[in-house]
Image (cartoon, rainbow, N blue to C red; front, top):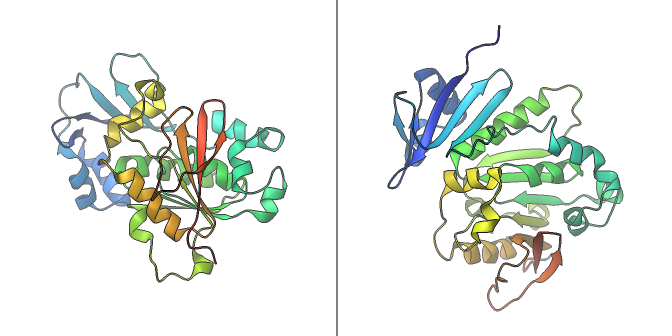
Length: 280
């Protein structure tokens, strides 16, 4: 008989989301990140009546699931790198056209032999980091929201526990990527490419139509005005080759310090390419 799911739920109020959790589940969260980190991001409450809106996080035998309580009827969101669409895409990737892989370096199987060091400064749900690592890149991913970090961390742990899963050179770090832009770090140890896919309020509502993006938007909220420009500018000063900024296809181009980027277009996505200023 399967174990009963333990759950917590969160909903957004004035500044911090409310987070309902029993003691056992909260202990699991705090085993991955310190209590102070969680309390700076969420207001904890004891498990009470069913909330009418927000999110519910469950731990089941199949892993962690996040449910949106908005009446949409969507199934709970689960991050799973072992099976599902991401795993299928990884398996089919050698014969698929992947614009992002081309941007990282070259095309096709040659990438595995020349794979660059990549820092993903905006981990989110981890899809792009997972794909880049599966293509052979050495990836370090940063996420400053503890709930998103926790979900990806647990999904990656489950992936690595599967003996049949191909190994990945992928490291997760909690925090703002900008705090790791250390000017004293030797150029040989810096990332060749910094990849950014931020969630900002100027994106059109249509871009938030998928379950995944609505979850991320609901959990993270809006970033401060002007932060995107600062993030790209500082990344340009730290990467040794280039900065890739993922944007909706028709989003306004971000001009950073008077520099307009080159662009590579996908079906619904655009990658803006900024040359690094710290080239060796």
